Image (cartoon, rainbow over all chains, first blue to last red; front, side, top):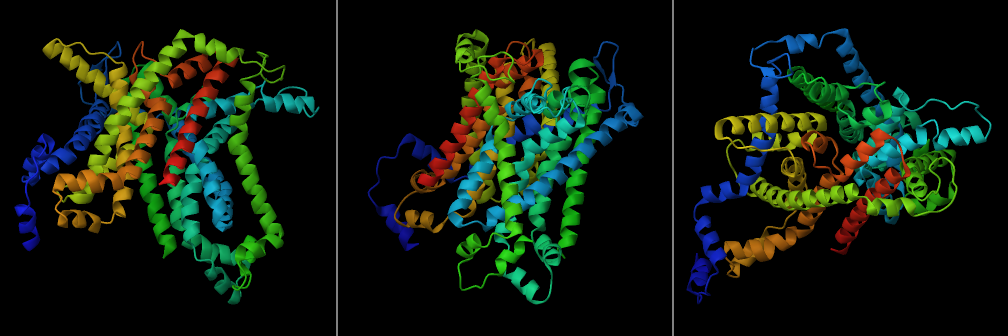
Amino acid sequence: MALAERVETQPERPASLAARVVDWIRRRSGVKLSLVLGPGAFWLVVFFLIPLGVVLAYSFASRGAYGQVIWRLTLENYTRFFDWLYIRVFLVSVWIALLTTVICLVIGYPFAFVMARVPRRWRNALLVLVMVPFWTNFLVRTYAIMLLLRNEGLINSALRWLGIIEQPVTMLFTTFAVVLGLVYGYLPFMILPLYASIEKFDFTLVEAAQDLGANTWQVFTRVMLPLTMPGVVAGSILVFIPSVGAFVTPDLLGGGKVVMIGNLIQQQFLTVRHWPFGSAVSFVLMAVVLISTMAYFRVGGERRV
Amino acid sequence: MSTTATTAPQTAPLATRRRWRLKPGWLVLNSNVLLTFLFLYAPIVILVIFSFNASRQQAVWVGFTIEWYEQMIRDERVIAAAKNSLIIALVSTAVSTVIGTLTALALDRFRFRAKTAFEGAMYLPIIVPEIVMAISLLVFFNTSFNLLDRWLGLTLKFGLGTITIAHIAFSFPFVAVVVRARLADFDRTLEQAAQDLGANEWQTFRYVTLPLLMPGILAGALLAFTLSIDDFVITFFNAGIGATTLPLEIYGRIRRGITPEVNALSAVLLLASIALVLGSVLLQRRR
């Protein structure tokens, strides 16, 4: 209290208008909170939550003859999804995303291991080198893969020049191309959390395990992997989510031959103009993402115990 | 495997010991690192190199030229798209940096009802697949524009405005996360010291809190700028007719066929974002 009094008795400087406004706000904590929280809450509710709500509403509506939305409530958009045609698209997406996640993990884990074990002054440089592709334009990077894989691309030309093949090998517009593009795009998402968790790993535990007679494989599976599981879980989720909902990669590298959920949604909204069905597919995709995230966390959590 | 390298006696620094022990495990691991970097960088580097190739057939190197870049600069569509991209990125960065910083402060400094729910909702735009966010904004704008037209006779269209609003919607949570990380290890005694020395709440915020948060806010702003400049999916669904950005222009051209001009345009966008990252790294190192 004494301090506060001292402050009060100091000769008052002429307060600026901004300061006086702020002072007025300060005395009303509700006003202050709504000023600080308001803009974010507004944007989140109006331009994120309400749009999602509208999509949810649309997913129960019907489509008119000209692509307009008719408010006749129905579940047929969801039942329609159980057509083999769409189930296939769904399974292909999950399969491609899983494959991408596993490949990223297999490449990313040893990579993160080395990153965590090199002398400290190199680590930051390696980290920046991993981050750079992660920050660069995804569309352009997908296009770069496209340039390499096409029939007239560098890989086919090189193979032909070396005399290994006569005819170009079709690589573009295959599942291989899509998985390659996704791994290329999302590998940094796997490496960064893995690095964070391996760096915190106490390597004296490895010695302890070896002293107790564990071989290298046992040390890895029984000690190191369980203790770095949070990184594995985080990295896998960060790769799986954008992969399963990918649109650009299957669009450019799959070329209509590999159709994933993202392409199906785009088709329904921009080509077929069946917005209610497109909305239902979007919610199925959201459900897949949320359920797999929760499942993965649970598995990761149990393994740690 | 590799873990054997860690069994070096504790007395010797691990790093120096390891350099002399080129065990097979480390060779495998190091070649993994080299190959991964090759995988990450070769496609980009090749793209940039071939954007200088004089031949239209890109697989064969014919000679060096900057013709494609000259054509690009003279192309009015490209210039218009670049201008749009910059306007959108600047506005959305400014707005989402302010909103994101305020949100981070609210989450760090205030208690309020439904705080956990708000936090959960704030992470959703980061988790939800891009395409779902894209179509939900498309549906929302379309529906509300129809209603406004019918009720108020107000005609609104898709364009720079809708793109910018959408960009703010997905950028500000990222800014909030980055700034909040900075707030988490914020030394609050500095603020108390300032107030003990007679600063009022505004002065404390303006001269103590804000400068200390600045690196985080700048990092968030750079992230928002990069996200906006690079975004394709959400822009694609919310651009309408007439408004293009650089990624939309590149996509349109790729769909029409691969030409050296696309390579030049892509290379420029690529180098711009690399410059942004390196800039942010240097910025953070200086502080």
